[in-house]
Length: 318
Image (spheres, rainbow, N blue to C red):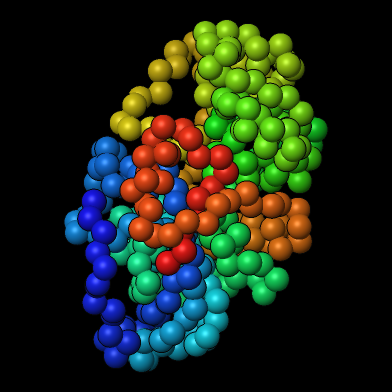
């Protein structure tokens, strides 16, 4: 990875219809950015590429020939993982936009938000509520929120609960009526998780091989993630958000079939999911815990992320 002090600003006169030029103010740093930097997923980013996909900024230009743009010059908008989809294929029509075969991805197949200016699409940027701070809005743009068909009051275990996505998941879960078991390690993360509404805390480093026993001991009906298929209740649901580095899911068929489990993978949320997630933050139901650092410290942030030292989210000032 290299940090450039100068980079050509896209020419507004060269924008195509429905494209827009956004001046970025803040950008969150996601684990996916680290994977893209390392190139350790089976699918590699196209190179050279500017990373980042949690950006908030201002629309500075809109391509000539754009008709019925949902955003205008001067609007404050969010840039997400999905940069554009066709909106016409079967997946898009069914609401599965992240699965569109022609999707473009910020920071992976098109340039992302670790830069002062980025080109995106008018119908895919997300308006930011006026009451919401730009730095606080940035991490929400990759929350990957997905409403599960789980009864209110059910237990849900969240591995990595003290991290950028995990600490948001605690708050969304409690706002939706779930009871949370937080799984992570370290006193700072323990304090954060319990303060945010988790009812139970499990330190995976202290539990070691007994993690499954400790989760089940909290409540026999926990519905979570890590060694989830072993401690999730019969007919439970396991939602997978993070993508390990080309690691298969080593779960015996007798566990999956015998317990009648449901495995759900979620790449990210839809445009509507993002709007609803931002509204919950704007209403004060969810609070983003973040630290602001300069773009020049991105490499240090990646290093801390790899070592599991980041509590909450890091947001870069661009």
